[in-house]
Image (cartoon, rainbow, N blue to C red; front, side, top):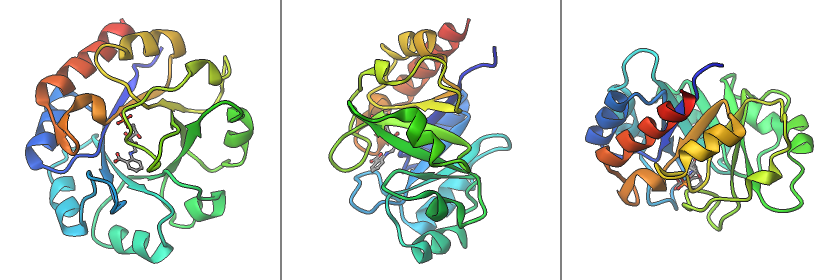
Length: 207
Ligand SMILES: O=C(O)c1ccccc1NCC(=O)[C@H](O)[C@H](O)COP(=O)(O)O
């Protein structure tokens, strides 16, 4: 059983990047969605990504962004993975020639198998709670909406924290987990102790 990968999302400060890397995060997410309180600018993101050591992935998060805006980020920020968190179709996600994951905003009636089949080029499907503002809401969703034996590379997200992530990993055995609010002291400001506790919870559940 491979260990559960861990993405910490919505980082805005060098000290938070260092804390997440030191705690053992596998991926660091940067939000390029201006309405988010966690949004970063291009130069800011370039400086933060430059802090990442080998084998810690940089993830850029977009919500219904114009292709030119994504290209402008890619021209300056070395992103290893793109995360599309809006209503983007497969072709809009695949056009940049980078690995990408697609977010599914979960609520009753969402057929995850059907959703996943419409994104055949995705490296993974990130399942998140359906919240206003697309994401980063700090809310869990009904995990039973995830079909048993879902074959895609599942990234579990939405309201995770050190208290519930162990149960989530043991119950769903996702490829990865993703967290933002659950490791913050305030939106966009991460808490090193909460990051460490979250990662410890994942490690304990992995056994
Ligand atoms: O983080 C944001 O502010 C955000 C804004 C708009 C779209 C997506 C956003 N975040 C995407 C993520 O991958 C978050 O980590 C995910 O939604 C989980 O957030 P949380 O429930 O706060 O852990």
